[in-house]
Amino acid sequence: MSGAEEIVTLTASQMAKAMKKGDLSSRQIVEAELEITKAVDPKTQSYLSTCFTSAFMVADAVDQARAIGQELPELAGIPIAVKDMIVTKGVETTAASKILKGWVPPYDATSVEKVKESGMPILGKTNLDEFAQGSSTENSAFHPTFNPWDLERVPGGSGGGSAAAVSSFESPLALGTDTGGSIRQPASFTGSVGVKPTYGRVSRYGAISMASSLDQIGPCARTVEDAAMLFDAITGYDPKDSTSIPDCPSSALKAALEGKGGDLSKIRVGVISEATGEGFSKDVTDGFLRGVNLLSSMGAKVEEKSFPNFAHGIQIYYILMPAEVSSNLARYDGMRYGLRIMPPDATAFSMMAATREEGFGAEVKRRIMLGTYVLSSSQYDKMYAAAQKVRTVLINDFKKAFESFDVLVCPTSPTTAFKVGEVEDPVTMYKNDIATIPANLAGLPAISLPVGLDKLGLPIGFQIMADRKKDEVAFKVASALEEAVSRENDGPIWSKAPRLWKSGE
Amino acid sequence: MSDFSYEQVQHLAKLACIALSDEEIEDLKNDLQGIVRSVALISDIDIAGVEPTTNPLPLPPHYREDVAGKTLDRDVLLEQAPECEDGMFVTPRILGDE
Image (cartoon, rainbow over all chains, first blue to last red; front, side, top):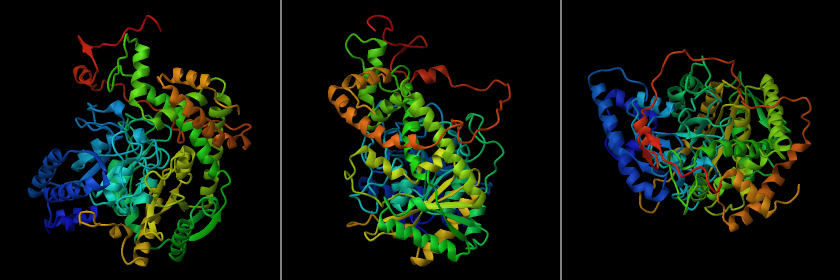
Protein backbone atom coordinates (compact mmCIF):
# COMPACT_ATOMS: atom_id res chain seq x y z
CA MET A 1 0.00 0.00 0.00
CA SER A 2 1.69 3.22 -1.02
CA GLY A 3 -0.36 5.88 -2.83
CA ALA A 4 -1.28 8.81 -0.59
CA GLU A 5 -4.79 8.85 -2.00
CA GLU A 6 -5.28 5.20 -1.18
CA ILE A 7 -4.02 5.68 2.38
CA VAL A 8 -5.91 8.82 3.39
CA THR A 9 -9.24 7.44 2.19
CA LEU A 10 -8.96 4.54 4.63
CA THR A 11 -10.97 4.81 7.82
CA ALA A 12 -9.07 4.95 11.12
CA SER A 13 -10.22 1.40 11.81
CA GLN A 14 -8.85 0.19 8.44
CA MET A 15 -5.57 2.01 9.12
CA ALA A 16 -5.30 0.26 12.50
CA LYS A 17 -5.87 -3.15 10.91
CA ALA A 18 -3.37 -2.50 8.11
CA MET A 19 -0.71 -1.43 10.63
CA LYS A 20 -1.32 -4.54 12.75
CA LYS A 21 -0.88 -6.74 9.67
CA GLY A 22 2.33 -4.93 8.77
CA ASP A 23 0.93 -3.61 5.47
CA LEU A 24 1.22 0.01 6.53
CA SER A 25 3.34 2.09 8.89
CA SER A 26 2.37 5.14 10.87
CA ARG A 27 5.09 7.09 9.05
CA GLN A 28 3.46 6.21 5.73
CA ILE A 29 0.11 7.46 7.01
CA VAL A 30 1.53 10.75 8.27
CA GLU A 31 3.44 11.19 4.98
CA ALA A 32 0.24 10.61 3.03
CA GLU A 33 -1.71 13.07 5.18
CA LEU A 34 1.05 15.64 4.71
CA GLU A 35 0.97 15.22 0.93
CA ILE A 36 -2.82 15.53 0.81
CA THR A 37 -2.89 18.43 3.27
CA LYS A 38 -0.38 20.37 1.14
CA ALA A 39 -2.71 20.03 -1.84
CA VAL A 40 -6.05 20.38 -0.07
CA ASP A 41 -5.58 22.81 2.81
CA PRO A 42 -5.04 25.87 0.58
CA LYS A 43 -8.63 25.18 -0.59
CA THR A 44 -10.36 24.27 2.70
CA GLN A 45 -8.16 26.24 5.13
CA SER A 46 -8.99 23.68 7.81
CA TYR A 47 -5.84 24.20 9.86
CA LEU A 48 -4.57 27.23 11.77
CA SER A 49 -1.21 25.55 12.23
CA THR A 50 0.34 22.16 11.56
CA CYS A 51 3.00 20.21 13.46
CA PHE A 52 4.12 17.45 11.12
CA THR A 53 7.68 17.37 12.49
CA SER A 54 6.52 16.18 15.90
CA ALA A 55 3.88 13.98 14.22
CA PHE A 56 6.64 12.10 12.39
CA MET A 57 8.54 11.62 15.66
CA VAL A 58 5.48 10.04 17.27
CA ALA A 59 4.82 7.93 14.16
CA ASP A 60 8.39 6.61 14.13
CA ALA A 61 8.27 5.76 17.83
CA VAL A 62 5.05 3.81 17.29
CA ASP A 63 6.46 2.00 14.25
CA GLN A 64 9.58 1.00 16.20
CA ALA A 65 7.54 -0.19 19.18
CA ARG A 66 5.38 -2.27 16.86
CA ALA A 67 8.43 -3.71 15.12
CA ILE A 68 9.75 -5.13 18.40
CA GLY A 69 6.37 -6.62 19.20
CA GLN A 70 5.30 -4.20 21.90
CA GLU A 71 1.60 -4.21 22.68
CA LEU A 72 0.05 -0.91 21.58
CA PRO A 73 -3.24 0.91 22.09
CA GLU A 74 -5.92 0.45 19.40
CA LEU A 75 -5.32 3.90 17.90
CA ALA A 76 -1.52 3.88 18.04
CA GLY A 77 -0.04 5.45 14.92
CA ILE A 78 -3.31 6.94 13.69
CA PRO A 79 -3.06 10.69 13.18
CA ILE A 80 -5.45 13.23 14.64
CA ALA A 81 -6.15 16.95 14.32
CA VAL A 82 -7.05 19.02 17.38
CA LYS A 83 -9.43 21.97 17.46
CA ASP A 84 -7.51 25.07 18.47
CA MET A 85 -9.89 25.47 21.43
CA ILE A 86 -8.03 22.65 23.21
CA VAL A 87 -4.63 23.37 24.73
CA THR A 88 -1.52 21.55 23.51
CA LYS A 89 1.75 21.78 25.40
CA GLY A 90 4.40 23.59 23.43
CA VAL A 91 2.08 24.16 20.44
CA GLU A 92 0.50 27.59 19.92
CA THR A 93 -3.17 27.59 20.95
CA THR A 94 -5.25 30.62 19.97
CA ALA A 95 -8.98 29.78 20.13
CA ALA A 96 -8.86 31.59 16.74
CA SER A 97 -8.61 34.88 18.64
CA LYS A 98 -6.15 37.73 18.33
CA ILE A 99 -6.13 37.94 22.12
CA LEU A 100 -4.35 34.57 22.37
CA LYS A 101 -2.18 34.82 19.25
CA GLY A 102 1.28 33.51 20.05
CA TRP A 103 0.25 31.85 23.32
CA VAL A 104 2.10 28.58 23.84
CA PRO A 105 0.40 26.58 26.61
CA PRO A 106 2.69 25.07 29.25
CA TYR A 107 0.38 22.04 29.67
CA ASP A 108 -1.76 19.57 27.74
CA ALA A 109 -5.51 19.19 28.02
CA THR A 110 -6.39 15.81 29.57
CA SER A 111 -7.95 14.72 26.26
CA VAL A 112 -4.70 15.62 24.48
CA GLU A 113 -2.71 13.68 27.10
CA LYS A 114 -4.92 10.68 26.39
CA VAL A 115 -4.44 11.08 22.65
CA LYS A 116 -0.69 11.14 23.21
CA GLU A 117 -0.83 8.13 25.54
CA SER A 118 -2.66 6.33 22.72
CA GLY A 119 0.33 6.95 20.45
CA MET A 120 -1.56 9.20 18.05
CA PRO A 121 0.51 11.70 16.03
CA ILE A 122 -1.06 15.18 16.23
CA LEU A 123 -1.06 16.77 12.77
CA GLY A 124 -2.13 20.29 13.70
CA LYS A 125 -4.60 22.69 15.24
CA THR A 126 -7.86 23.26 13.41
CA ASN A 127 -9.76 26.46 12.75
CA LEU A 128 -12.93 27.58 14.54
CA ASP A 129 -15.14 30.57 15.14
CA GLU A 130 -13.33 32.75 17.68
CA PHE A 131 -13.65 31.17 21.14
CA ALA A 132 -16.02 28.61 19.57
CA GLN A 133 -18.65 31.30 19.14
CA GLY A 134 -20.38 30.91 15.80
CA SER A 135 -22.01 28.41 13.46
CA SER A 136 -20.00 28.88 10.27
CA THR A 137 -16.25 29.24 11.01
CA GLU A 138 -16.45 32.64 9.32
CA ASN A 139 -15.70 34.31 12.69
CA SER A 140 -12.12 33.10 13.08
CA ALA A 141 -9.79 36.06 13.63
CA PHE A 142 -7.37 34.54 11.13
CA HIS A 143 -9.24 33.12 8.13
CA PRO A 144 -12.48 31.30 7.29
CA THR A 145 -12.67 27.57 6.59
CA PHE A 146 -14.48 26.32 3.49
CA ASN A 147 -16.73 23.29 3.07
CA PRO A 148 -14.95 20.48 1.18
CA TRP A 149 -18.24 19.53 -0.52
CA ASP A 150 -18.61 23.02 -2.03
CA LEU A 151 -15.84 25.52 -1.41
CA GLU A 152 -18.29 28.43 -1.73
CA ARG A 153 -20.11 27.19 1.36
CA VAL A 154 -19.36 27.21 5.07
CA PRO A 155 -18.40 24.00 6.90
CA GLY A 156 -20.58 24.91 9.88
CA GLY A 157 -19.22 25.98 13.22
CA SER A 158 -17.72 26.50 15.50
CA GLY A 159 -15.65 23.40 14.75
CA GLY A 160 -15.58 23.85 10.98
CA GLY A 161 -11.84 23.20 10.84
CA SER A 162 -12.00 19.78 12.48
CA ALA A 163 -15.03 18.74 10.40
CA ALA A 164 -13.48 19.98 7.13
CA ALA A 165 -10.13 18.32 7.90
CA VAL A 166 -11.82 14.97 8.47
CA SER A 167 -14.18 15.12 5.49
CA SER A 168 -11.51 16.37 3.06
CA PHE A 169 -9.18 13.50 4.10
CA GLU A 170 -6.60 15.81 5.69
CA SER A 171 -6.93 13.72 8.86
CA PRO A 172 -8.85 10.54 9.71
CA LEU A 173 -9.86 11.86 13.14
CA ALA A 174 -10.15 15.13 15.02
CA LEU A 175 -11.07 16.46 18.43
CA GLY A 176 -13.80 19.07 18.73
CA THR A 177 -15.62 20.97 21.44
CA ASP A 178 -19.40 21.29 21.58
CA THR A 179 -21.21 23.96 23.63
CA GLY A 180 -24.37 24.28 21.54
CA GLY A 181 -23.65 22.10 18.51
CA SER A 182 -20.07 22.97 17.53
CA ILE A 183 -19.15 19.34 16.84
CA ARG A 184 -22.49 18.11 15.45
CA GLN A 185 -23.62 20.94 13.16
CA PRO A 186 -20.26 21.00 11.30
CA ALA A 187 -20.47 17.19 11.05
CA SER A 188 -23.91 17.60 9.52
CA PHE A 189 -22.65 20.21 7.00
CA THR A 190 -19.63 18.13 5.96
CA GLY A 191 -21.05 14.60 5.82
CA SER A 192 -18.97 13.44 8.77
CA VAL A 193 -19.73 11.98 12.18
CA GLY A 194 -19.68 14.21 15.26
CA VAL A 195 -20.22 13.16 18.86
CA LYS A 196 -21.07 15.28 21.87
CA PRO A 197 -20.59 12.98 24.87
CA THR A 198 -22.62 13.09 28.07
CA TYR A 199 -21.56 16.15 30.11
CA GLY A 200 -18.72 14.92 32.31
CA ARG A 201 -17.63 11.83 30.36
CA VAL A 202 -14.67 13.61 28.76
CA SER A 203 -12.56 15.84 30.96
CA ARG A 204 -12.86 19.55 30.20
CA TYR A 205 -9.42 20.21 31.70
CA GLY A 206 -7.55 22.12 29.04
CA ALA A 207 -10.59 22.88 26.91
CA ILE A 208 -10.58 26.67 26.76
CA SER A 209 -13.71 27.59 28.70
CA MET A 210 -16.60 29.08 26.80
CA ALA A 211 -19.74 28.18 28.80
CA SER A 212 -18.65 25.70 31.42
CA SER A 213 -22.04 24.13 32.19
CA LEU A 214 -22.44 23.29 28.48
CA ASP A 215 -18.93 22.66 27.07
CA GLN A 216 -17.86 19.13 26.20
CA ILE A 217 -14.97 17.72 24.13
CA GLY A 218 -15.80 14.97 21.63
CA PRO A 219 -14.75 13.03 18.53
CA CYS A 220 -15.01 14.05 14.85
CA ALA A 221 -14.60 11.18 12.39
CA ARG A 222 -15.75 9.84 9.04
CA THR A 223 -17.43 6.74 10.49
CA VAL A 224 -19.30 5.87 13.66
CA GLU A 225 -16.82 3.08 14.40
CA ASP A 226 -13.87 5.50 14.17
CA ALA A 227 -15.66 8.01 16.41
CA ALA A 228 -16.33 5.21 18.91
CA MET A 229 -12.65 4.23 19.02
CA LEU A 230 -11.68 7.82 19.76
CA PHE A 231 -14.50 8.15 22.30
CA ASP A 232 -13.19 5.13 24.22
CA ALA A 233 -9.70 6.66 24.18
CA ILE A 234 -10.62 10.10 25.55
CA THR A 235 -13.37 9.37 28.09
CA GLY A 236 -12.78 8.67 31.77
CA TYR A 237 -12.66 10.25 35.19
CA ASP A 238 -10.26 13.12 35.68
CA PRO A 239 -9.67 14.59 39.13
CA LYS A 240 -8.68 17.86 37.40
CA ASP A 241 -12.30 18.42 36.30
CA SER A 242 -14.82 18.71 39.13
CA THR A 243 -17.66 17.80 36.75
CA SER A 244 -15.94 14.62 35.51
CA ILE A 245 -18.08 11.51 36.11
CA PRO A 246 -16.40 8.79 38.19
CA ASP A 247 -16.93 5.07 37.50
CA CYS A 248 -18.36 5.25 34.01
CA PRO A 249 -16.40 2.79 31.88
CA SER A 250 -16.64 3.27 28.16
CA SER A 251 -17.59 0.65 25.57
CA ALA A 252 -18.57 2.71 22.54
CA LEU A 253 -16.61 0.57 20.07
CA LYS A 254 -18.36 -2.57 21.26
CA ALA A 255 -21.73 -0.81 20.91
CA ALA A 256 -20.86 0.46 17.42
CA LEU A 257 -19.82 -3.02 16.26
CA GLU A 258 -22.99 -4.47 17.73
CA GLY A 259 -25.03 -1.85 15.86
CA LYS A 260 -23.55 -2.94 12.53
CA GLY A 261 -25.56 -6.15 12.87
CA GLY A 262 -28.61 -4.05 12.07
CA ASP A 263 -30.89 -5.45 14.78
CA LEU A 264 -32.71 -2.61 16.52
CA SER A 265 -35.66 -4.71 17.70
CA LYS A 266 -35.19 -3.68 21.33
CA ILE A 267 -34.78 0.02 20.60
CA ARG A 268 -37.58 2.53 21.15
CA VAL A 269 -37.11 5.64 18.99
CA GLY A 270 -38.88 8.94 19.67
CA VAL A 271 -39.14 11.28 16.69
CA ILE A 272 -39.26 14.87 17.93
CA SER A 273 -42.28 16.34 16.16
CA GLU A 274 -41.20 19.96 16.69
CA ALA A 275 -37.97 19.36 14.75
CA THR A 276 -39.45 18.80 11.32
CA GLY A 277 -41.63 20.99 9.14
CA GLU A 278 -41.61 24.70 9.90
CA GLY A 279 -38.12 26.18 10.01
CA PHE A 280 -36.57 22.98 8.60
CA SER A 281 -35.90 22.77 4.86
CA LYS A 282 -37.88 20.24 2.85
CA ASP A 283 -34.77 18.37 1.73
CA VAL A 284 -33.57 18.07 5.33
CA THR A 285 -36.98 16.87 6.54
CA ASP A 286 -37.26 14.33 3.68
CA GLY A 287 -33.74 13.02 4.28
CA PHE A 288 -34.40 12.78 8.00
CA LEU A 289 -37.66 10.86 7.50
CA ARG A 290 -35.90 8.42 5.18
CA GLY A 291 -33.50 7.78 8.05
CA VAL A 292 -36.40 7.22 10.44
CA ASN A 293 -37.85 4.64 8.01
CA LEU A 294 -34.50 2.85 7.94
CA LEU A 295 -34.52 2.61 11.74
CA SER A 296 -38.03 1.23 11.54
CA SER A 297 -37.00 -1.33 8.92
CA MET A 298 -34.33 -2.62 11.33
CA GLY A 299 -36.95 -3.41 13.92
CA ALA A 300 -36.89 -0.23 16.02
CA LYS A 301 -40.18 0.78 17.57
CA VAL A 302 -40.67 4.29 16.20
CA GLU A 303 -43.14 6.78 17.63
CA GLU A 304 -43.60 10.49 17.31
CA LYS A 305 -42.90 12.46 20.48
CA SER A 306 -44.10 16.00 20.96
CA PHE A 307 -41.64 18.21 22.81
CA PRO A 308 -43.30 21.61 23.31
CA ASN A 309 -40.27 23.10 25.09
CA PHE A 310 -37.71 21.82 22.56
CA ALA A 311 -37.64 25.07 20.59
CA HIS A 312 -37.28 27.06 23.81
CA GLY A 313 -33.81 25.57 24.16
CA ILE A 314 -32.35 28.26 21.94
CA GLN A 315 -33.85 31.01 24.12
CA ILE A 316 -32.56 29.48 27.35
CA TYR A 317 -29.20 29.03 25.66
CA TYR A 318 -28.85 32.63 24.50
CA ILE A 319 -29.30 33.77 28.09
CA LEU A 320 -27.19 31.22 29.96
CA MET A 321 -24.37 30.80 27.42
CA PRO A 322 -23.48 34.53 27.13
CA ALA A 323 -23.68 34.85 30.92
CA GLU A 324 -21.09 32.10 31.30
CA VAL A 325 -19.05 33.50 28.39
CA SER A 326 -18.92 36.96 29.95
CA SER A 327 -17.65 35.44 33.17
CA ASN A 328 -15.17 32.96 31.61
CA LEU A 329 -13.67 35.46 29.18
CA ALA A 330 -13.03 37.98 31.95
CA ARG A 331 -9.66 36.21 32.35
CA TYR A 332 -8.35 37.74 29.10
CA ASP A 333 -7.14 40.97 30.62
CA GLY A 334 -3.61 41.43 29.25
CA MET A 335 -2.09 40.87 32.69
CA ARG A 336 -0.57 37.39 32.70
CA TYR A 337 -0.58 36.03 29.15
CA GLY A 338 -1.84 36.83 25.68
CA LEU A 339 -2.22 40.22 24.06
CA ARG A 340 -1.51 43.44 25.98
CA ILE A 341 -2.35 46.82 24.45
CA MET A 342 -0.93 49.83 26.29
CA PRO A 343 -2.81 53.08 25.67
CA PRO A 344 -0.95 56.34 26.45
CA ASP A 345 -0.57 56.90 30.19
CA ALA A 346 -2.07 53.47 30.81
CA THR A 347 -3.70 52.36 34.03
CA ALA A 348 -4.56 48.73 34.69
CA PHE A 349 -8.18 49.42 33.77
CA SER A 350 -7.47 51.30 30.55
CA MET A 351 -4.96 48.64 29.49
CA MET A 352 -7.51 45.88 30.08
CA ALA A 353 -10.25 47.73 28.21
CA ALA A 354 -7.95 48.54 25.27
CA THR A 355 -6.63 44.96 25.14
CA ARG A 356 -10.13 43.48 25.09
CA GLU A 357 -11.30 46.01 22.48
CA GLU A 358 -8.40 45.11 20.19
CA GLY A 359 -8.21 41.40 20.98
CA PHE A 360 -11.85 40.26 20.70
CA GLY A 361 -13.88 40.08 17.48
CA ALA A 362 -17.42 41.40 17.00
CA GLU A 363 -19.31 38.21 17.88
CA VAL A 364 -17.31 37.60 21.05
CA LYS A 365 -17.90 41.20 22.16
CA ARG A 366 -21.60 40.85 21.39
CA ARG A 367 -21.88 37.78 23.62
CA ILE A 368 -19.83 39.27 26.46
CA MET A 369 -22.06 42.37 26.37
CA LEU A 370 -25.21 40.26 26.29
CA GLY A 371 -23.94 38.15 29.18
CA THR A 372 -23.05 41.25 31.17
CA TYR A 373 -26.59 42.51 30.56
CA VAL A 374 -28.42 39.32 31.65
CA LEU A 375 -26.27 39.15 34.79
CA SER A 376 -26.80 42.84 35.67
CA SER A 377 -28.83 43.46 38.83
CA SER A 378 -31.90 44.71 36.95
CA GLN A 379 -32.08 41.63 34.67
CA TYR A 380 -30.68 38.83 36.82
CA ASP A 381 -33.97 37.45 38.16
CA LYS A 382 -35.99 38.17 35.06
CA MET A 383 -33.51 36.65 32.61
CA TYR A 384 -30.65 34.64 34.11
CA ALA A 385 -32.42 33.01 37.08
CA ALA A 386 -35.57 32.44 35.00
CA ALA A 387 -33.57 30.74 32.22
CA GLN A 388 -31.89 28.46 34.77
CA LYS A 389 -35.35 27.35 35.89
CA VAL A 390 -36.64 26.83 32.35
CA ARG A 391 -33.51 24.72 31.83
CA THR A 392 -34.76 22.49 34.66
CA VAL A 393 -38.17 22.24 32.96
CA LEU A 394 -36.48 21.11 29.73
CA ILE A 395 -34.33 18.58 31.62
CA ASN A 396 -37.44 17.16 33.29
CA ASP A 397 -39.11 16.82 29.88
CA PHE A 398 -36.13 14.76 28.72
CA LYS A 399 -36.12 12.63 31.88
CA LYS A 400 -39.75 11.80 31.27
CA ALA A 401 -39.19 11.11 27.58
CA PHE A 402 -36.37 8.66 28.31
CA GLU A 403 -38.75 6.58 30.45
CA SER A 404 -40.51 5.66 27.18
CA PHE A 405 -37.70 5.93 24.65
CA ASP A 406 -34.09 4.75 24.30
CA VAL A 407 -33.18 7.45 21.82
CA LEU A 408 -34.72 10.66 20.52
CA VAL A 409 -34.02 11.67 16.93
CA CYS A 410 -34.27 14.82 14.83
CA PRO A 411 -32.36 16.53 12.01
CA THR A 412 -29.05 17.94 13.27
CA SER A 413 -29.51 21.28 11.54
CA PRO A 414 -32.51 22.97 9.89
CA THR A 415 -30.66 23.35 6.58
CA THR A 416 -27.67 21.96 4.74
CA ALA A 417 -24.51 24.09 4.37
CA PHE A 418 -25.19 27.70 3.42
CA LYS A 419 -22.98 29.99 1.34
CA VAL A 420 -20.13 32.00 2.81
CA GLY A 421 -21.49 35.45 3.71
CA GLU A 422 -25.10 34.36 3.24
CA VAL A 423 -26.16 34.64 6.90
CA GLU A 424 -25.29 38.02 8.43
CA ASP A 425 -27.95 38.62 11.08
CA PRO A 426 -26.90 37.14 14.46
CA VAL A 427 -30.36 35.89 15.43
CA THR A 428 -30.74 34.05 12.09
CA MET A 429 -27.28 32.53 12.58
CA TYR A 430 -28.18 31.40 16.11
CA LYS A 431 -31.18 29.44 14.78
CA ASN A 432 -28.78 26.97 13.15
CA ASP A 433 -28.33 25.37 16.53
CA ILE A 434 -32.00 24.99 17.41
CA ALA A 435 -31.85 21.18 17.28
CA THR A 436 -28.40 20.72 18.82
CA ILE A 437 -28.66 23.05 21.84
CA PRO A 438 -31.16 20.98 23.89
CA ALA A 439 -28.62 18.14 24.34
CA ASN A 440 -26.10 20.60 25.82
CA LEU A 441 -28.67 22.13 28.15
CA ALA A 442 -29.66 18.68 29.44
CA GLY A 443 -26.13 17.21 29.42
CA LEU A 444 -27.20 14.43 27.02
CA PRO A 445 -24.99 12.50 24.61
CA ALA A 446 -25.80 13.16 20.95
CA ILE A 447 -24.37 11.96 17.65
CA SER A 448 -24.75 13.47 14.20
CA LEU A 449 -24.19 11.29 11.16
CA PRO A 450 -24.94 11.80 7.48
CA VAL A 451 -28.22 10.32 6.29
CA GLY A 452 -28.11 11.34 2.63
CA LEU A 453 -27.58 14.24 0.24
CA ASP A 454 -29.91 17.08 -0.71
CA LYS A 455 -30.76 18.12 -4.27
CA LEU A 456 -27.54 20.14 -4.48
CA GLY A 457 -25.50 17.13 -3.41
CA LEU A 458 -24.83 18.49 0.10
CA PRO A 459 -24.89 16.20 3.15
CA ILE A 460 -27.89 16.07 5.51
CA GLY A 461 -27.27 15.34 9.20
CA PHE A 462 -29.30 12.98 11.39
CA GLN A 463 -29.06 13.45 15.17
CA ILE A 464 -29.48 10.71 17.77
CA MET A 465 -29.77 11.70 21.43
CA ALA A 466 -29.68 9.25 24.33
CA ASP A 467 -30.13 9.52 28.07
CA ARG A 468 -27.23 10.73 30.20
CA LYS A 469 -24.38 8.22 30.47
CA LYS A 470 -26.05 6.12 27.75
CA ASP A 471 -23.71 7.32 25.00
CA GLU A 472 -23.23 3.70 23.96
CA VAL A 473 -26.93 3.36 23.04
CA ALA A 474 -26.56 6.32 20.66
CA PHE A 475 -23.45 4.70 19.15
CA LYS A 476 -25.29 1.44 18.55
CA VAL A 477 -28.22 3.11 16.79
CA ALA A 478 -25.91 5.44 14.82
CA SER A 479 -23.83 2.52 13.62
CA ALA A 480 -26.90 0.57 12.49
CA LEU A 481 -28.24 3.60 10.64
CA GLU A 482 -24.85 4.28 9.02
CA GLU A 483 -24.80 0.75 7.60
CA ALA A 484 -28.35 1.06 6.29
CA VAL A 485 -27.64 4.49 4.71
CA SER A 486 -24.51 3.07 3.12
CA ARG A 487 -26.48 0.18 1.57
CA GLU A 488 -29.10 2.59 0.25
CA ASN A 489 -26.50 4.90 -1.31
CA ASP A 490 -24.10 2.30 -2.77
CA GLY A 491 -21.41 3.24 -0.27
CA PRO A 492 -20.92 5.50 2.72
CA ILE A 493 -21.78 9.20 2.33
CA TRP A 494 -18.27 10.30 3.34
CA SER A 495 -16.77 8.38 0.41
CA LYS A 496 -18.67 10.65 -2.00
CA ALA A 497 -16.85 13.81 -0.81
CA PRO A 498 -14.85 15.53 -3.57
CA ARG A 499 -11.18 14.53 -3.87
CA LEU A 500 -9.85 18.06 -3.61
CA TRP A 501 -6.28 17.09 -4.40
CA LYS A 502 -7.33 16.40 -7.97
CA SER A 503 -7.34 19.50 -10.10
CA GLY A 504 -10.81 20.69 -11.01
CA GLU A 505 -12.43 19.32 -7.82
CA MET B 1 -38.67 45.60 26.95
CA SER B 2 -37.32 49.10 26.52
CA ASP B 3 -34.85 49.84 23.73
CA PHE B 4 -31.16 49.96 24.52
CA SER B 5 -29.81 53.51 24.81
CA TYR B 6 -26.30 54.62 23.94
CA GLU B 7 -25.58 55.31 27.61
CA GLN B 8 -26.84 51.89 28.66
CA VAL B 9 -24.59 50.07 26.17
CA GLN B 10 -21.69 52.30 27.20
CA HIS B 11 -22.30 51.36 30.85
CA LEU B 12 -22.36 47.65 29.98
CA ALA B 13 -19.09 48.09 28.06
CA LYS B 14 -17.53 49.59 31.16
CA LEU B 15 -18.73 46.65 33.27
CA ALA B 16 -17.40 44.23 30.64
CA CYS B 17 -14.17 46.22 30.46
CA ILE B 18 -14.11 46.71 26.68
CA ALA B 19 -13.19 50.10 25.19
CA LEU B 20 -15.84 49.96 22.45
CA SER B 21 -15.86 52.56 19.68
CA ASP B 22 -18.91 54.77 19.11
CA GLU B 23 -19.73 52.81 15.99
CA GLU B 24 -19.64 49.51 17.87
CA ILE B 25 -21.92 50.92 20.56
CA GLU B 26 -24.41 52.01 17.90
CA ASP B 27 -24.37 48.53 16.30
CA LEU B 28 -24.74 46.80 19.66
CA LYS B 29 -27.81 48.88 20.53
CA ASN B 30 -29.65 47.10 17.71
CA ASP B 31 -27.99 43.71 18.07
CA LEU B 32 -28.69 43.43 21.79
CA GLN B 33 -32.26 44.58 21.29
CA GLY B 34 -32.82 41.93 18.60
CA ILE B 35 -31.33 39.14 20.68
CA VAL B 36 -33.09 40.12 23.92
CA ARG B 37 -36.40 40.25 22.04
CA SER B 38 -35.78 36.79 20.55
CA VAL B 39 -35.18 35.19 23.97
CA ALA B 40 -38.10 36.91 25.71
CA LEU B 41 -40.49 34.02 24.92
CA ILE B 42 -39.31 31.98 27.88
CA SER B 43 -41.28 34.28 30.17
CA ASP B 44 -44.40 32.36 29.01
CA ILE B 45 -43.22 29.14 30.68
CA ASP B 46 -44.49 28.27 34.16
CA ILE B 47 -41.50 28.08 36.50
CA ALA B 48 -43.30 28.40 39.82
CA GLY B 49 -41.60 26.12 42.34
CA VAL B 50 -38.94 24.96 39.85
CA GLU B 51 -35.34 24.75 41.06
CA PRO B 52 -32.67 26.39 38.87
CA THR B 53 -30.08 24.22 37.07
CA THR B 54 -26.45 25.25 37.30
CA ASN B 55 -24.93 21.88 36.40
CA PRO B 56 -26.82 19.53 34.06
CA LEU B 57 -25.35 16.45 35.73
CA PRO B 58 -24.75 17.21 39.39
CA LEU B 59 -22.43 14.78 41.12
CA PRO B 60 -22.28 14.01 44.83
CA PRO B 61 -19.51 16.08 46.42
CA HIS B 62 -16.21 14.27 46.26
CA TYR B 63 -12.72 15.25 47.26
CA ARG B 64 -9.37 14.26 45.92
CA GLU B 65 -6.78 12.58 48.11
CA ASP B 66 -5.05 15.15 50.29
CA VAL B 67 -1.63 14.66 48.76
CA ALA B 68 0.62 17.26 47.25
CA GLY B 69 0.56 17.25 43.45
CA LYS B 70 2.91 18.75 40.89
CA THR B 71 2.21 22.30 39.82
CA LEU B 72 3.50 24.14 36.81
CA ASP B 73 6.89 25.79 37.04
CA ARG B 74 6.77 29.54 37.77
CA ASP B 75 9.39 30.46 35.20
CA VAL B 76 7.63 28.47 32.49
CA LEU B 77 4.38 30.33 33.24
CA LEU B 78 6.11 33.70 33.28
CA GLU B 79 7.51 33.03 29.81
CA GLN B 80 4.02 33.75 28.48
CA ALA B 81 3.65 37.03 30.39
CA PRO B 82 3.50 40.30 28.43
CA GLU B 83 6.05 41.68 30.92
CA CYS B 84 7.71 40.23 34.01
CA GLU B 85 10.46 41.08 36.45
CA ASP B 86 12.03 39.21 39.39
CA GLY B 87 9.56 36.35 39.07
CA MET B 88 6.53 38.63 39.08
CA PHE B 89 4.08 39.99 36.51
CA VAL B 90 4.55 43.66 35.68
CA THR B 91 1.27 45.53 35.25
CA PRO B 92 0.35 49.16 34.63
CA ARG B 93 -0.42 51.18 37.75
CA ILE B 94 -3.68 50.24 39.45
CA LEU B 95 -4.13 53.51 41.33
CA GLY B 96 -4.53 56.96 39.81
CA ASP B 97 -7.17 58.31 37.47
CA GLU B 98 -9.47 55.29 37.57
